[in-house]
Length: 222
Image (tube, rainbow, N blue to C red; front, side, top):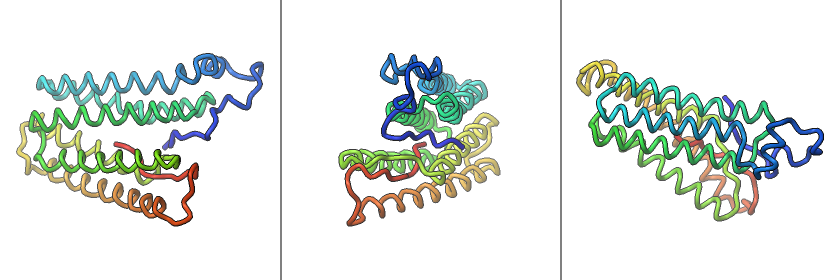
């Protein structure tokens, strides 16, 4: 599971131009905008939004499949960025932004179309709003925000629960079918992991010796 977080300077910054690979040269020329990780992140977001639109039209199985492919980009972008030596703070921000937009798009579709018992998407939405707000406060203090493994596991669990709930709807099952209950159980565990990671971050955030520009690992986004 690649965390896709970077050092304060881009991977290619300390490499002489003649020693950079092609992707690093392109990244340097575009100030880190055009990197394989960023491209995968944006394509993944497009697929998630396309799948969400398909789900809203009640093409559930096709929509779920497209969203799954889009979410796989969340694994691939960090891995590719690491392998090509093109990690940067901009790439980390692009990854996080695409994740959040895709997640909230899917949550809106779930809420509007009633694909799950309403407290489920509400709980995920509230959790991620709180998480994002804490991240913004930390950035104002110039504290670097990086994902924690427990947060990544939480995010994976939340998506797995959503896919399970959508599949239950696609199978015309009730909100209290075996698949739905199992998905809700996964969601409870996932949110528990996420809250644990967030609690650790908040504890660190309010430490008396927490100073500006101190890198702190915190929980990942959905």
